[in-house]
Length: 437
Image 1 (cartoon, rainbow, N blue to C red):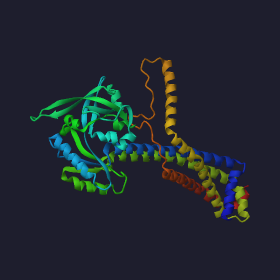
Image 2 (image 1 turned 180 degrees about the vertical axis):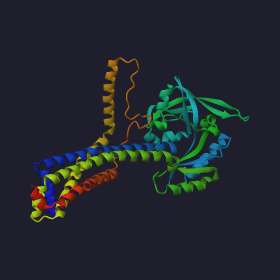
Image 3 (image 1 turned 30 degrees about the vertical axis):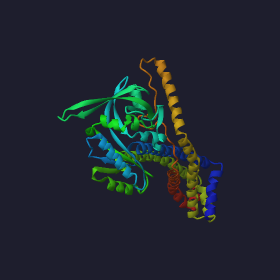
Image 4 (image 1 turned 180 degrees about the horizontal axis):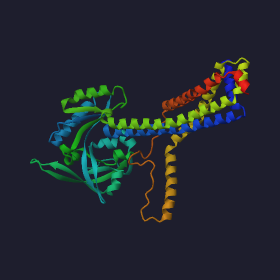
């Protein structure tokens, strides 16, 4: 029995109007249905991780940080020294820009409440001229420009929690240590020039941007970090460590130089672990669907025993019969992949719209029952992806290589689960089958 004969015999299972055809099509449907969620999970997890990573690298940790430990008590001298060092760093091949920054925790008070916040004292051009900030920040009110010494740009979530709007005054309360060792509060008033968000509240919910010079006044050395944030040509370049070493040689012993991977190691470990666990759970669904192929083939082997005996008595060998059933499993898995993959990609591309539709539907139903019960409590809308922990809008990217790997693994898995019934079919003895029939 040639491979062509095995191929034609396998095709016959799908074209003949028998129960075998229905079983195989049902198995194909299950495989296609199971591959949709795993593709959606891959697209959503990759897109969300890429979006979070881009914002962390471009807006928070920068590509490389040179952290200073010898801060001068004279703020003017210190700023001059840092800016001079930043200019030297810009001469390193591969470095696009370098910005001086000081950040630390303070207590901020607005009209309605107070909250903890992170003050980022930055050079004004970082907000107004840096392409990454212009691209990734959404300005909800006002502007990103720090027009005066007491100007501030704050995160949208923080503005909402303390009740601050553009033009309002906020007070920043920090701690400073007197020469005699006593710790006393230091209060400064700033005017809100803009309210913004990068779409990832866990990152920017507590940010307050102020001019670099006034940041030195409000933030004491003991409660803040002083560093130079460095942008390179490519944060994912293989030359990043070489650039880091060159910067370390320029800055000397007064600085410690780290790249973005070293600064955010625990965050990315958490991202990778969560993604692997999600894919593993989705893979189990595909595995269960693939087992249906094996069950269908077992049924076909039992139903076609007489047919198999006739073929063997006419000269077909066991290998040809076995190949026919393996090809049947292969075609079933391939058909499921062909049907399920485009639907999975489509769902992934429309994931933001799907989530919004689900939220509206759930909130409509919940609100309906809430009104019927006449509860005295305030209705709080359900959020499927809480923006406090996830991105408010997922920037969808299609990881073609990973989707292709999932499709290939699904087809291979379909062939593997087909082996046992196929081998059994190839070992059938025609004389015993004829006697029993």
